[in-house]
Image (cartoon, rainbow, N blue to C red; front, side, top):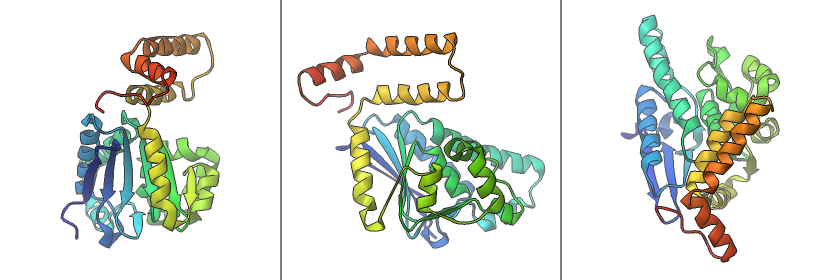
Length: 264
C-alpha cells in the first residue's frame, strides 16, 4: 500500500496545484488517514500564492472507489460518539473542497463510486474519461450518502438523486454529463490534454476575482431575486471594481497584454 495516500505537486509556472489520491492498489478508497491528508493538502494549496487552480485526480485505474471497506468495518464497532467524530472529519473535508478559495477541477481518469462521486460533485468543475463509470453505492451496504449528499444534490438535482441514490446502479460518463455531475467527457487518451487546456484557461484569470465569484455563487444559490439580492450584487461589484486586481485586469485589456496578477 502506498505510504503517502495523497500526492501534492505544484506547477508554479502555470499556477496549477495537483492533488492525486494515491492508493491505487485499493482503487483510491479513502479512510481516516487519507481524509486527514487530503484536508491538509487542500489547505496548503489554498495558502500557496503560486497556485491559481487546484486539480484533483486519482492514481491507477480508478478515481476513487469511495470508503475503504476495512475502515468501514472497524467503524461499525465504534460508539456513536466515535462515529460522529469520524463523520465530522469527513464533513469538514467536503466543505473545505467545496468552499476552497480557488477553483477546483476533478480530473476523473477512472471510476468513481460512493464518496468518490461526492469528491467530483464538490469540485467546481469536472472532466471525465469516456471509460469512467459512476455509482452511489451506499444503499447496497445498508448505508446512505449523507456526508456527500448536499454536494451531489447541488450537482445533479433531487430528481436524478432519487434514482441514483436509491438504485445504486452504475452509470456512464455520458450519463454523468447529462445529469450535471461532470461538465466534459473525452476519450481517455485525450483526458490529460483536455484537462491542461481547462486548467490553463482558469489559471489565466484574476485569483481574487475567482474567489469572489465562488463566494457570490454560494451566496446567491437558492436565494430569491429581491431587493436584498440586488443590493448584495451591487455592493459586490462596487467593491471589486476598486481593487488593484481589477485595475490591472482592465489596464491589461486596454493595453492588449496579459495581466500580471499578484504572485506571478
